[in-house]
Length: 289
Image (cartoon, rainbow, N blue to C red; front, side, top):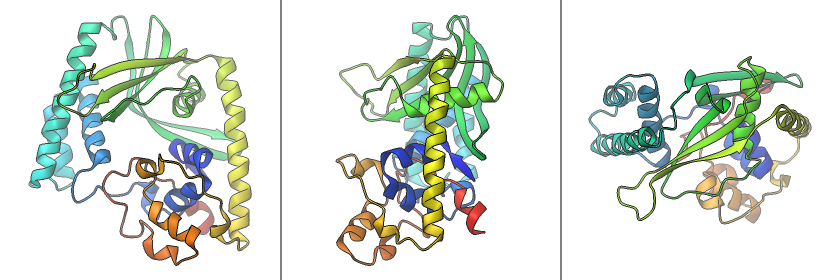
């Protein structure tokens, strides 16, 4: 089976969310189409598009315009506005990054790097925003966009997984992982961007590999149970205030808990609403045809 790194993170957070928003995802490669109108996810994609172009020495404006044309959104006023906003946020970050000298002495190894690594008979994959090497050794970097900054844990799952995949793909052992956080607001009383780091080492990544293996084995057991007729209603939800922004299948989850016809309010097959942040997996294709 193939698992996007975000799917494994979802499994750890809430197994019912994993089932509703990843396992049931019908789209090729789990990549749902963009919304009719731009939400947080689409704005984040536009910022990432601009940053990838900037890292490669290309023109961010051209890259963002090409994205709009590719998605057929070049004449949608809301998308035109979102693209202009994304360029503003990306350029503001780039200016700050240059002033701070964060890239001094670094050598770029990859941008939007597609990583795949085998583990326990399965494939874990993901797209890394930036990989470089410099004074701090090999470093992985992921851009995070949003209206506010969230606290970073020293054992952040996504950064550890990116570091592990980079090592397994032959880029050396990363010694640092970074979130480049970019606020998607025009005016703010605090710094609208920053870098937060966690240290990496072979010992840390070896331990994370053990945790990944455990997660894969747990999913194997769940898939076996589902294939043998387990009622998905029996998958226990883990509810919290984060459900409102983290999960696009909250309505289906609620109806599940109420004993109603939850299939009628799934975000699929018509696709999730704008703002769905994590794209799904292809894991179901390998077992269900």
